[in-house]
Image (cartoon, rainbow, N blue to C red):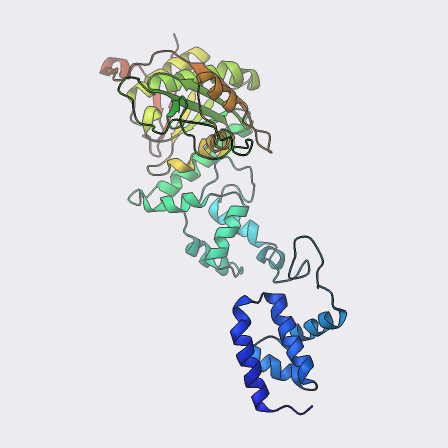
Length: 410
C-alpha cells in the first residue's frame, strides 16, 4: 500500500485527540495498529506522527499478533519487571559511601554512628559528590539521604542559628566523644522531654484499626473546661545509644531540672548500672534549652548530686542552638512512641505507661516506662554558694556546651 503525507496528518490528529487517556501500553498498541493498517513503511510514518519510538511500535505489533497482555499479573504492570532506568545505586556502587562520608565524616560509612546528622544543603552535597566523580542531582541526593536513614526535617532546620560558626564543629566533637566513650564500654545517653500530653478522652493524632463504623469517641474540644481542670503529663526520656534501649518517666508535675535528673537517676539504677557494671563515666547529650538547658543552674546542681551518689564523672555535651530535632532521642525513641500510640486516646496514666512500654522496632528497641507522681516545684533558685560547690570542669572547646562534673570527694 502506497503511503501519502495526508496519512501522517490523520494519524497525528487521531493520536492527539486520544493521547490524554492512553497509558504507555495503550500508546504503543494504538501506534502499532495504525502502522499495521498502513502496511510497508507504516512504522516510520507512525513514529513520526505520534512520537512513539520504533522499538515500542515493534513491541506493540508483537502484542497485537499474540493478542495477549505484555505482563499478566495482578498488579497490572505496564512494563516487565526490571524495565526502566537503572537506579543511581546500581550504576554507581560507591555513591552511598561517598554521601555517607560527606554528611557524617566521623562515621566513615558506619550506619551505627553515635550521632547521625547533616547540616549541608542538598545542592552543596550534590556539588561535592560531582567533584568526587559521582554525578547525582540534588533531588536524588535527598532520596539517597532518606535511604541512609537521615531526616529531611534536619535540612529545613538549617535556616536557624546561622550566626553560630562552630555549629558543625560541635556536632563533630559530640560524635567523637560519644564514639570514644562507647568504645571504652561506658554509657552514652540522649535525654529530652517529650511534649506534654493530655490525659483523658481527647483526640490523639493518627489512625488505629477498629471495626468499621466504630471509631473511638473523644471530646470535641481540647481547651480547658471551667468546671474541670485538664490533666497533663510530661514524659522525660532517656535513650541509651549503645544498647538501643529507652527509659521514660511519665511526670505528673512540672518539667524541671530536678525531674530531669531524677529520671536519669531512675534509669541508672534500673537499666544503666546493671548493663554497665564497670562504667568509669557517663556521657549525656542534651538540647541547649528546657529543663536540661546549658544555662540551667539547677540542672548542674542535680547532676552533681547524682555524680556524688554513683561516684563516676558525668560528661555533658549540649546540641548547638536551633538543632533540637537532631537529638538522637527524637528519632530513635520519641518518634516510635508517637507511632505506637497514634489514634489512641491517652485516657489514663496506666494506658500511657503501657503504650510507651509496648513500643518496639524491627531493630530491637526496648523501652521501660514508669509513672513519677512526685512534686517538682518550679522556680527554685540556686544560690551562688551552692553553685560554687559544683565540681564542674569546662572543656576548652565551648565550655558552656561541653563540661564534666566530677564527684566531690567527701
